Amino acid sequence: MDKKQRYWVASKSSKVAPKSGSNEGQSAKPRKSVAIKQKWNGFVNHPLSMAYSMCFASRTPGRRIIWALFLLLGMGWFSFQSFKLLTKYFSYPVTTKVTLVYEDAPDFPAVSICNFNMFRRSVVNANGYGQLLKYVLRRSHGFDTSNDTVDTSKFDSFNMTELYLTMGHQIKDTLQGCTFNGEPCSYMNFTAVLTSMGLCHTFNAGKGGQQILKVKQAGTDFGLHLILDVQQYDYVALGYRAGLKILIHHPETPPVVSQLGFAVGPGTSTYSAIHKQRVINLPKPYESNCLDNNDSNMPGYTKYTTIACMLTCQTKYVVQKCGCREVGMPDINNSRVCRPLELLDCVGKEKGNFQKLKDQHCDCPVPCDTISFKPVLSYAAFPSNDYVSRMNELNAGDRDFNVSSDYLKGIHDYLSQNLLELTVYFQELNYHVIEQKPAYDSESLLAEIGGQVGLCVGASLLTVLEFCDVLLAVIGIRLGFQ
Picture 1 (tube, rainbow, N blue to C red):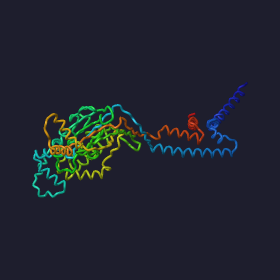
Picture 2 (cartoon, rainbow, N blue to C red):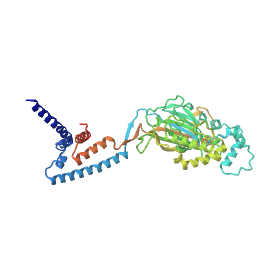
Picture 3 (cartoon, rainbow, N blue to C red):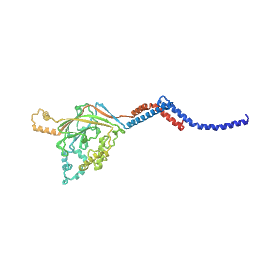
């Protein structure tokens, strides 16, 4: 080949090359479309996606339209049902499960005892507070005290906490007999506690290193048996009731005896058969919105309870309004106990206002775990008419002397007017656990949505994942990643 021929071939090749590059640029988009079509056809022709195959791959236009309508209807029904299921799930419904639990040796509850009389007359008079007390009584009953000559400045020097502790009824004098689990007990098993009723005493409080007592068996012989003297002869005219108020509660629950306790009067024998109950609630976002029992930031309380929360909230309100707190309220920021006139002029009124406004001032959700004791009460007369004379005969032994009927009647009258018998016991060694459970959890939601996918769109989880894979692949092709 001569030079002329070689030059002609080279120039022809150089002219053809640019044309080849131009065709490559023009065919890039068709290649993407082909790849996308191949991906989609591979999905719709899959044996697990028959509806999509009939909708997109059928050769008859009418069949494609009918199957497209079926597919749209299925997708619409699936969307509607999924919305209902999601609405149900996010409403956080609950169901209640009740279980009967048996215990061999259950913990015995705390038993708080308060006398309806707050101050003993003998101690009030011995300390020279008789006239002051009379003045307070006249004020509390609405009498005109403008002409009274009582020096009320003496109230300013009172240590009110010490006053309640020393002038209240002492457990040594009140307790005349005590057995627990068939064994003797004494005033040493009681703990002094100040409440809105003044000085009270709690059996099995679990404080000061005391262990919580347990019972061996159910029944009256293995419970707490007390004989108590209300000392009605030492009452002052602060109220018109005589007797005691009793509250059976968990040791970690503050004893709100005045509001939640039951009354027992002198001359009666009271049997309190108790039934234990445990309630377990669900936290937020469920409707009960309970608070963990260990989340307690309230002074004086180691565990969170609704009662402790309400007492703390009430105390803050009263201290803010009156500058002091009622005896029995928790000590917040070293607040002092109110003096008698402050109780009359401010505290009583503000406690009434608090009851109207407590929803605005307090947020006290239920605790997540609550143990309560429900008493079932029965009564008998105490003592019997023959009891005094029979005890006198036993005490006299072989001594030869006669006791007058008037003397025996006097003893019987004293016993019937001052003494009472109280027996607290477990009726059964089992208790009910009432527990909230989620009625519709995430597993139920996924299962029902999966069922709707299979029913409405004829697909399974794998089909859905395959569709997502195809969709991502198509997006990747369009963006040039594949």
